[in-house]
Length: 269
Image 1: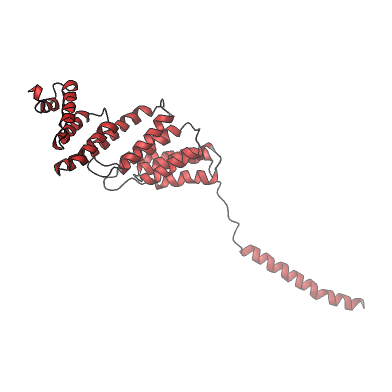
Image 2: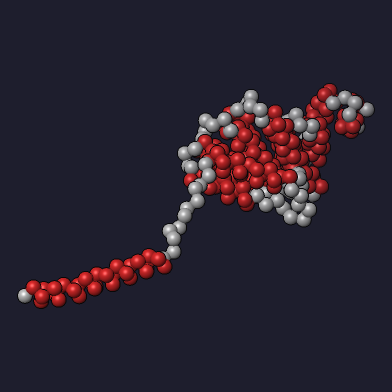
């Protein structure tokens, strides 16, 4: 009986040893566990993104537009991996700036807008609002063409000046605002002149009045007044025309417009 028990146990030992050997061989041939590189800190990534931006700024692009894809990717990594850090907040502005420098203004406006909405009390809000306006300014066209972007830029500068009238960006915003307002006034003058040449004097007069009412003090008043007076003359509204010419004589003495108005005022001849 004892000998029989030993014989029964022997095959089990053989199988156990074989299994252990197979496991050892498998372990010996398996690849080593993958090592994960440690992610740099938010501060290190932000510094790296800044260096990438500076390198792109300093590089020359004779035939190609600047490519800021690397810093954009770096700043996006900060947002993805350190969403609650101050660097993540600033990375939103940095990405917007990268798109702005790449002349991808729609993308830039999107990031600037999101920043203002998500961080309304942040110190960089005035800058983001100013840059939004400048993004549309860069897309605006001369007075003879469509003025949609001009109006968008003005709306952004209006909001900036209303909310942060004493910010460091207010002075430049006011200067650009005046330029854009003048452009809109010139655009309206151009439409009025077209109607005038087509002998559509009521329509022309309406636009000249619009220039006077909506764009005063931008250097267009005297010309708009004179042409409005001429429209009234052609529309057989003589008394109104004479009043306008008199206003010109009183307020714009010594100018070519005043000389032209004098030719149309009987008492001045």
